[in-house]
Length: 273
Image (cartoon, rainbow, N blue to C red):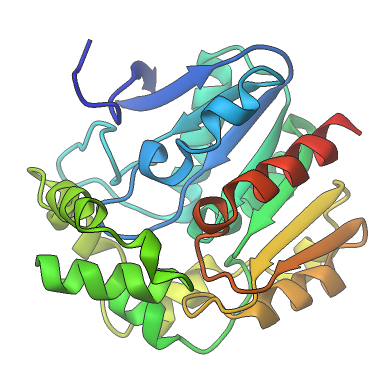
């Protein structure tokens, strides 16, 4: 067993292995992380695990090109391939149907899953979600254009949070060191090249398809989010028929980190209802 908490279980998904966390029991919730440098499922979601694992089965994969899933030479990183990875993971773990929680990039992925494989999804949670078109923000441009250094990582984490006390020296060091693991920056920098507005459009779904999403959907956003605009969530609320929106004040892009207990409480009530 690895001494790194980010490295958990490994399973074959298509042509490569996926690193994933799998804990608790009951109805499955699959957590899809965001696209920041040095991100992993563990970095994104670990604060929720102890609060929620007694209520549901929690599955959190590292998406291809991120974290500790296998990086294959000449891999193509796009939405179709990420969707296929999640479906391959469902099949490998014999998950017929799951609740989905998507953060930012993971929100766009969750929307794509709901459009392409509606029968595999139960309920949907979108947090600070991409998935519709918007003008590239300074925060997202900095995240996708990240060049590894502790100073750049510190600036980025301060963009991600409203309350900068969460940006400890330890967190900066940990996330910086994650971003320079062998192969990490190479795959990350290849995903969202300039002009980065194109990356936003590649994450945006067809509105007609989003309008047809039948799933009960909880949309969550931090009011002070400087990475993904709050307006995204208002637009998703208008598009998705069976949707509700919860906005946290005094909160940036990292709702699950800045408002952990409240975020977990919202999820538990939503999925149990």
